Amino acid sequence: MRLLQKAYSLIVGLALCVLSLEAQVHNADSVPEKKNMVYLEHANTLSFNKSVNQDAQILVGDVCFRHDSSYMYCDSAFFYKNDNTLEAFSNVRMEQGDTLFVYGQYLKYDGNTKVARLRENVRMENRQVILFTDSLNYERIPNIGYYFEGGMIVDSLNQLSSYYGQYSPSTKLAVFNDSVRLENPNFTLTSDTLHYNTDTKVSTILGPSVIVSDSGTIYTSRGWYDTVHDISMLLDRSEIVSGNRFLTGDSIAYDRENGFGEVFGNMSIRDTLQHVILQGDYGYYDEKSGYAFATDSARCLEYSQGDTLYLHADTLQMITIDSTYREVKAYHGVRFYRKDLQGVCDSMQFNSKDSVLYMYREPVIWNGKYQLYGDTITVFMNDSTIDFAHVKQFAFAAQELDSSYYNQLKGTDLKAYFSGKSVRQIDVSGNAESIFYPLEKDGSMVGMNTTQSAYLTIWLKDGKLEKIKTWTKTVAQMIPIPDLNPQQKVLKDFYWFDYLRPKDKDDIFDVKKKKADEAPKRSNKFVHGDDAW
Image 1 (cartoon, rainbow, N blue to C red):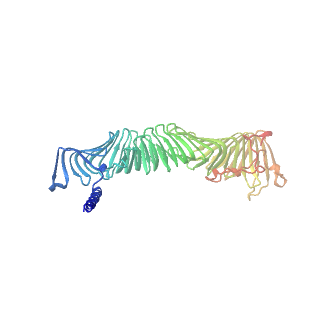
Image 2 (image 1 turned 90 degrees about the vertical axis):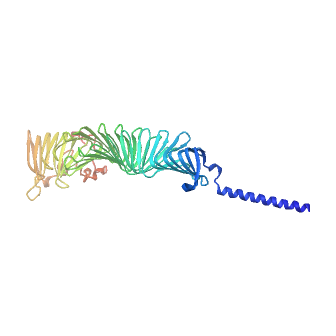
Image 3 (image 1 turned 180 degrees about the vertical axis):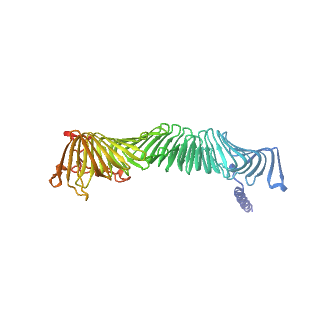
């Protein structure tokens, strides 16, 4: 009997233990874990009113809640203890640690998700960073607050506003979308998408943006701007406009304070006032001095004279002297093309003040079927046409009649005068020599005229010899065509450099070279006499 009583007691005890465990499991499922509970720390009055809110504790006066390390204050609140949520009204304040404070007039807080929704005159303060909006959601787990109906973030240097924005107090990173505006004492940036670090004050541009300042305007769609040091890296074909100058490139490193832009890839500097464009795959521009530099497929387009001059060289420089005067300098491998004038040389300089083109080291220019070359060539422009070209020290002019016959002039100094876009007159002084092939009315050649004199002048009409004048100890000779030998057909130092001639605006990049046995070896400069090429 006693054994049966003991067995019964054991069975009843086990049953009670099972029921107790089931009750604990049930309570664990229905009530949040203790660590996630929102606690009421203080309130002046606590009441229940089913007619107002049957599920809530009604708290009034100096209300304070605690959730983990976060505290929430307000004038009154509804506390839904079973749901672990609350609604706070009037003079709402959230505090997290001693660095983050959020203010508003209404708060709905979910202790399970740790999401706070604040409305009306919301202000989030994180040290020197303040966020203003009327609608803010603050998620405590990722530590991010975001607004979606317009807002503004202000720090010690900048003020940023947008329709949508978010801020992370832990990473110091703010994200802005739609109608973004960054206001700085020195400039204003408007954008579609912008990221901003409130610690470094660097803004990352991720959408179409415009930066306006007293010094100019920047157009870009990607890059970054350091608002402390006024420096930026602009990508994706950005453009900087400074007065009448436009700087464009694939990538631009820009120092706004010093007015210096360095460009990488497809650079273009356009001066709309002085009608010049400087291009290259690398270059830079100094806004304050007006100095520009271009290299790597460098090209300059000068269109102030009506007909555009296309110029290429290894290195190009543009120097602005004043509003009406600039210099363009080209170094090494110079090639240029204009419809009425083409040329090659080693180095060149163009001055806009007097419209003069200076060519140095083995210069050659072409006009129609005429070719001029010498030690140094200076080309004087007049409005949209060429006034005259001056070949100094050693000068040679040639006109192609066909592939075997060339009219030729040679001397110490030569000036070729233009009428319209063609050579009209040529003056030669100092040891003047000439070879001309007079033409019959049917265009046939009867012979070759040669002259030697101190001075010589020829006049041309429609590209043909109209008149020739020589003076001071002239020696002349006429040789019939059948009696000519190849050596007599050309003057000493004659070469026809048509293979070097740029044929169009794109041909300036084509550096043409003949085989060693076909092309003359050229010295550092054109010379005459026994030391010729």
